[in-house]
Each structure stands twice: as C-alpha cells, then as structure tokens.
Length: 161
Image 1 (cartoon, rainbow, N blue to C red):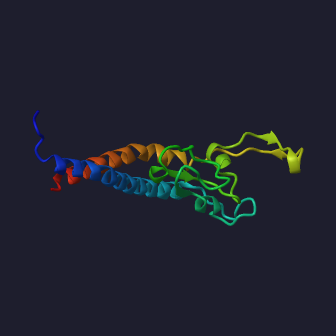
Image 2: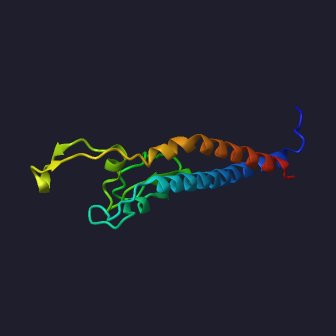
Image 3: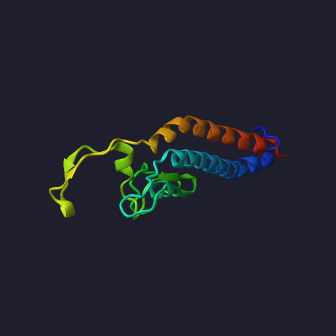
C-alpha cells in the first residue's frame, strides 16, 4: 500500500478552500449588486412633484439590496431567492410607501378603477423600464466576476504552503 506524500498539507489546503471561496463569492456578489443597483437608480424615473404622496425620487430611493433569501416587506420587484443566505443577494424596488414600482416598470393599460376610486377612468401609463434592463445588461459581467473570484481564491489557497 503506497503512502501519499504531503497528505497533511493537501488536507489543510482542502479545508481552507471553502472559506476562501465563500468569501470571494460574497465579495464578487456585493460588487455586482452595487453595480446593478447604481444603474437601476440612474434609470429610475423621478417625478417633478412626487407620486402617491411620496417626495420626488421615492421610487429611486426604494431600490435596495438585501443579503439573504428574504427581501424587504412589500417589495414589488425582485426574483425570489433560495439557497445559502450568506451567498444570496436580493435586489428589490418598492417598500411600504412605494408600492407602484411594478406599474412604472411594466406600465398600465387604460382601465376603470375599482376600490376607493370606483368608476374613475385611469388613462393608463406607458412602461418606463428601469429595473430589469440593468440586470440583463450586467448579469454576464456578474457571473464572470464570480467565476474569476472563485478561480483566484482556489489558486491562492493552492499556492499557500
């Protein structure tokens, strides 16, 4: 039976790999999320006098990133996330006061209102996409950034003696 040389050193490197890779992934995710959020905020429309009793820029200011699988309450946009909460970042638009982000993103058809303003004619609103175009434009860059970070972390762990 042959004995593996430097087995202890290899096992030590293998034990250090997950922590280094997780740290690198988290940093790459944070950079990518910051980049996406910044572009979304630049593209978000800002009304001159505010909407729905909110000050101008309320929609723009409601765009946030949250670590973990759950986002802020009443966030209207943002894909559901599952998996490791430490390696999950969720970007959302909307909050308890700004509940119209989806209407700005996708627009609204002319319709007769119900509820509190029953019977009122709403003229509709054109779509003003601000949320998904930056995500689509930057997701490939984000994936590449994460892959580079993983490879770099693995090389650094392997290079340590």
